[in-house]
Length: 336
Image 1: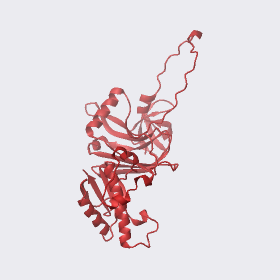
Image 2: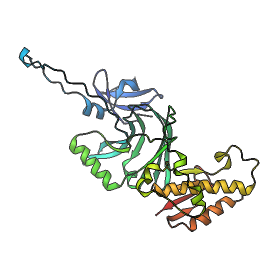
Image 3: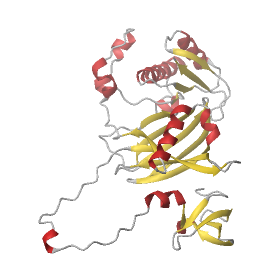
Image 4: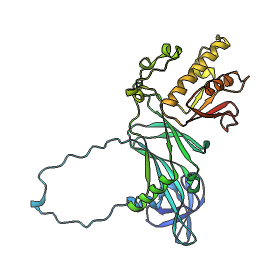
């Protein structure tokens, strides 16, 4: 829901300020303006912060004489796509001393590219998933995600977003995953900057351009990998590596369509190869964590993965505990 009870609003057709006092349905709210309560559609109102910082200043018309007319027209500026951002709008309230304090942050996904994307948004506090949302965002548009209490922003928040193109392009990657960590000190500095600049929001760039598809043959080093070698072109490592994932599902039906004729040994070999692949990608992309879904079953795949992790120098710790999304069927890995 875009609006909540207590939100300050402005009525678009009359430019009067008021407050949301009740939620009627997903399209209408009850508002109060100058002591009068009445229903209003959500597209008839807006937040006063956007009006405050985006309304045009009325400038008196100036007389132009013939001699002042420019002889040549300047070429219109062409709009250039400049990336996808996570935008934060501080919502202020008054404390007991009547000073402005930040009550919460209103979070938006802002797309300044012309491409439309599917997205899977997740917010983590101290490694635990607090909020998840899957939806679409059009080109050159913004999408309201949710509100976060300002007090909660001190609990090491991590924002994970996985993108994919709405209109599939064979030359582009199947998905792109990015992560944002916001430290408390940086957050305070950002809020102070927005107040000093008299701006309503501050933003973090998630990516500039959606990545191209990587030719799998260029990075297929299976033979050397099986021989125990790790071969990387350090100069072009991040350029040629495919995107990493924060969650990998090792259920065999997720990895291949023709698995019913395979033996247990062949199935586990495929699963462990897939695990090693995304483990190495997570390390190469400097991911903080990786969740491996191995299922419950008899625990053989889980035990094999845990044995491998005990020998990995990059692993800080790993845990197989109850997860709200995967139960006991997943192990979460924390990297150094």
